[in-house]
Image (cartoon, rainbow, N blue to C red):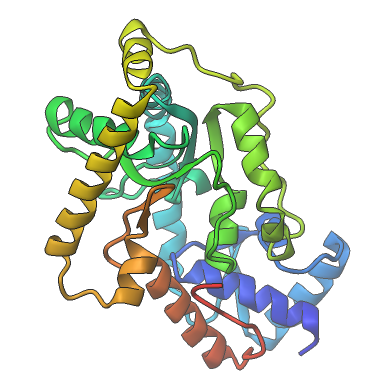
Length: 307
């Protein structure tokens, strides 16, 4: 196989991990190749003739993939569309919390789907030195007012605006970065993209969601302004340190079987970042992806979990 054919298979293999068959234009925008559409269609037809790739109703997938994934994707797209108003409302609520500078949608919803039992994931950027206060307030809101429901309020990744570069550089994180949907904090979001231009090397054709139509800053309410004013000095520094310590120690006790390297990857907890993926989703995705590449004998693609 030539390099373009291998790249097509890599793209299909990656999304096959999520049971997500791709349309023609998605093969181009999610692919690692920098070629033209005509080149893609030519090599795709070769793979179809060889029986390595299948096509049904405008979707492309690997031969050993179940066509039922098409129906699943379409149902999940309808479910995501039905949730749109709620997602916008919760995004506005999050943006008005103290010390939150940018709100983005990540995870499956940013790809246009929402599983029956899935969550809407948020990627947040907080003010430096106040990340753990912001996270604690959001968690308390979820527990008290949403009865701990994660469905439309899954806060699993926060960074501060002084630490915008993502350290894990691989196909998983690149895809998540370039499919983020910015909901507020356009200026901070654009700065985040500038700090992570490396992601384009994985998806050179990806058109990034624009932040031009979202507010640069979301106006805070009286309560948020009061909290930010009261916690702008040493009291805020100490409270943020306290919130960090409480959460870090609780996670250590809750997940005692995690090795140090697993904890560092899946529950990255520092003053400038809070990442809560205790089930090791990134590792599982990349491991499954690696297995699929091996089965396809497309084994020259480096798949690292951590940079």
